[in-house]
Amino acid sequence: MLPSLSSLPSPLTVEVRVSRRVPRSRAPLALALGAALAAPLVLTPTASAADPYTVTPLKFTVQAGGRSCTVDADLYRPAGVDRGHPAPAVLGTNGFGGSKSDGSTDAIGKAFAQRGYVSLVYSGLGFGRSGCLVSLDDPDIDGAAASQLVDFLGGKRAADDGSTADFVTLDAPGDPRVGMIGGSYGGAVQLATAAVDHRLDALVPMITWHDLAYSLDPNNAAVATDVPGAFKWQWTNGFYLIGEGQPLLQPSLDPTRINSLSCLHFVPQACQTIHTLNSGSYPADRTAELLAFARRVSPVSYLHRVKAPTLLVQGQADTLFNLNEATATYRTLRAQGTPVKMIWQSWGHSGGLTGPATGELDLSKGNLETSYVGRRVLAWFDRHLRKQRHADTGPAFAYHRDWVTDPNRTYATADRLPALNRTLYLSGDGKLVDNRGKVARGTRGYANWMIPTSHSESSLAGLIGLQDPPPHDTKGTYLDWTSDPLEYPLDVVGAPRATLKVHSPKAERTQNSGDAADKLVLFAKIYDVAPDGTRILVRRLVAPVRVPDVTKSFTVTLPGIVHRYETGHRLRFVIAASDDAYFGNRGIKPVTVVSGPREPGVLQLPVAGS
Image (cartoon, rainbow, N blue to C red; front, top):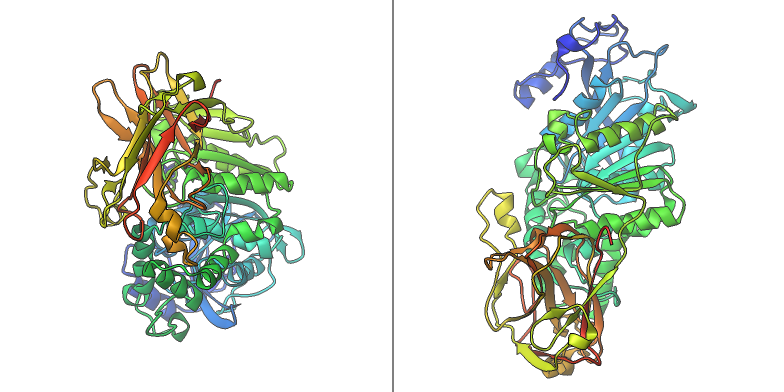
């Protein structure tokens, strides 16, 4: 929880060089804006002895993507901070569909102002009452807009009402000491901003993406990245509808928020990408164009320009942006020498928040000092913004263990990610064995239907609060391989990898048609089977694969997991013909798998403690 006002030291009476100061209240936003417009220009208001900070609504007209548009922001200024006593700054913005006023974004301003940081939170372009189109955190648009807010914090520009900030710590004239924090859409924008503005001193991107082409249309094959995967239609269309509904959800006459009737609120390339994915047809020329756009606006394309120290926080319960996304960003930054560390927390877009008592950061509750992740964030900013060289920023890698009940031990730490160090083999009799010599010869098969026959999750149900049915597979539409009961616990930490060889004559005849939609699609996943037969699809994660060449073996990188298989439990590996959260095969494509000791399928696991 945030400290109570009575527990804070009495602030000094200070000069505040911002105009039209409006106190935060629970009044409707329209009333607050009306009060702002009606309030007289006050040059030197004073903070009450009970107020740890003041909050000032500001507008900024920025140039972004060839358009001039307004950014709606709130400036949080701690009491006692002035030109003679400057403080470093924290910049933050909302997740997709949110605004500066939603709980998580507003909490950034409050939490860090309480702790002595100047905080500037704003509604991202196209959201809340900020103008311009939704451009998916394009560095040249969203990054450029955020850079102009950094100009304000550095004293290089004023807000639209003439307000200036001369109370932020500077590293050089016009160069403020500033970090960024935020989640999801508010996470990727940090990397986009750092790519175009090297004045940023620290980043904390949470539960965000590495490559939108993978996020929205994942192909977990280890090669053929130019081939689209299986369209994640539920998540993608849910967010698309939220984006297109913004002018209705947040009424505005700002013409910069409107594109056209065919693509109301997004930049045209984003709409074209969504329309192509929904079409279910992926000819080479159109596919190349949509993948190029999705990657151009994603960190995968511009991380080489990111130099700011970065603390990545990713969620283990996240079917939208899984752990592989943060891992790819982490490895890229580390390889190029950018200071980077990574935490895998329990919660993500698919839930999983187990409560602050287990070490999880909940910014809406402000539990920075009392959560493991929160303390790591504070240390990161202490080190890079307050320049406290003694601040311990923690190990390179940490992950949450939901099987540990002691809140002081829920996070395990390491200097590196576990390697793939355990190999199991897919036997022809449906067993998952630990020795190639135990592999039995056998042939088994399945066939897809014209409708989905497997269920992993209903992300749309989660968005609107409906109950999601348990995962299931329909007999005859999948194959599974199951291990013997474990003799001791097995902790899998990271992304398993499977190498497979399948036979599908129908898929072989159509795979070179020129339309990637004709290639075979399958879905790999891992279950935990209890002694009583109850099975759990670990974190409801699946790995869609559009097989590059059905005549050759291929490798599948599954989504990263952190999961303990208890003693007596069995590990089950499954490949299924479909999943109702994704688009699947075009036409009926029966599949057979031939197993034998000479060329068995292989499942590799990253096991911690081995």
